[in-house]
Image (cartoon, rainbow, N blue to C red; front, side, top):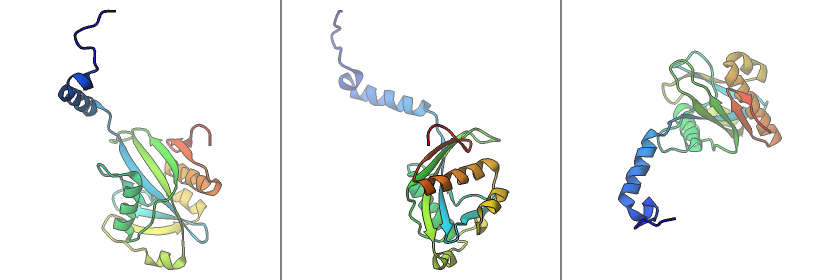
Length: 179
C-alpha cells in the first residue's frame, strides 16, 4: 500500500473543507415534522382531549415542535400557550411514525405522560389562545369515537404504556416490535 503525502482524514487535513462537507450533508438530510403530545388523565381515568380550531377532529393536547426545541419542551409550551397550564412532560410513553398523508410529509409524534390532575387543577384549565375551540375529559369509549382511528390507537397505546410502565413504538398508530 502506498502512502500519499497526507493520509490523514479530511477533518484533520482541512478543517474548513470538513465543515463545508458537513454543511452540505446536513442540507441534503431529510427533515421530519415532529409533534409532541401529553397524556393527561383526571381522577376518574378520563383523558383530556382538545378541539383544535384548525382541523375537524379532537386531538391530544400538545402540538408541533419548533426548530431547535426538544419534544418535551414543545409539549410543555403548547399546554401553557393553549390551556394556560404548567404541566411537566413526564416519561415518554409513545413514539409514533405517521406516514405521509394529504399535503403532509411523514412525521414523528411523541406522547409524554402528564400524570393525573385533580379537580382543582382541572378547573384551572382555560382556553388561553385562539387555537382551540374547546377541551374536555373523555371516557375511553367517548375518546375512541372523537378521534381519528390512528390517533385513538396512539392514545390507547399511551394509556397502556402509562399503566404497565412500558413504552410503545408505533407505525401509524399500530404497535411495532416488542413492548
